[in-house]
Amino acid sequence: MNENAGGSNGRIHVLGICGSLRAGSYNKGLLRAAQELARDHGIDIEIYERLRDIPPYDADQDTDDAMPEPVRHLKAAVSGAAGLVIATPEYNYSVPGVLKNAFDWASRPAKGSPLNRKPIAIMGASTGMSGTIRSQLALRQSLIFTDSFALLQPEVLIPRCADRFDANSNLVDESTRALVGKQMAAFAAWIRVVNEASDAAVGVQQ
Ligand SMILES: Cc1cc2nc3c(=O)[nH]c(=O)nc-3n(C[C@H](O)[C@H](O)[C@H](O)COP(=O)(O)O)c2cc1C
Image: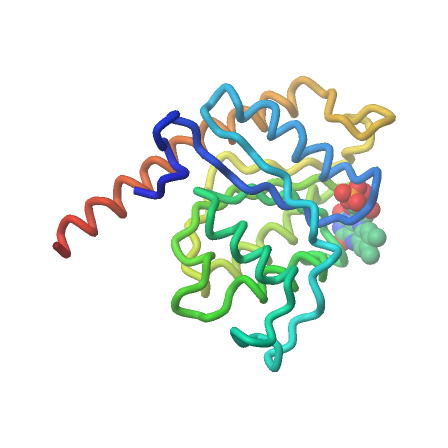
């Protein structure tokens, strides 16, 4: 079993990544709400703060010797987490470049990537009407190759989000908070299912 999923204290350690670098980001506020609401479901979310430091993907630097320190840090953080929660905006109908870039780094090596078999919950808020539906689908598409275990339901797609947050970009809309809490409950169960299946698979191999 992943020692960060239901370890000795029974808590699940999860890494939260926001796809927006903006100080007043709604998606960062959404992630903070997930962090708060997940606690009741046994999940402790550590919010990743170094997305800005990650350089553009360069295969020449993707070696043990040349790998940039922020990339090492990211890969270790993903590896050490029992799951990921991604809160992402939609940029031009897709995933923001900074987030896709981080996933590109983390996706290597293809066999042995920290994203392999990693449970991932996805949520997103946009000021437009689509509620990040296209960026979430684009991200899910990338996760096929990495063989990551993206949670399917409930989806957290938040359109016209501005009115649901206060002046400090904290999520205040009760129905949206309830949806985020529901997804975190499902995610806790999903992480346990994935880990039990992995343990069973190891048992079969032994
Ligand atoms: C470069 C760019 C592209 C955008 N493209 C979309 C889009 O395709 N769909 C959408 O709903 N909103 C789009 N928006 C608006 C974002 O939803 C809005 O800026 C949102 O607040 C970004 O999330 P954040 O508050 O977490 O930074 C775009 C914004 C930017 C800056």
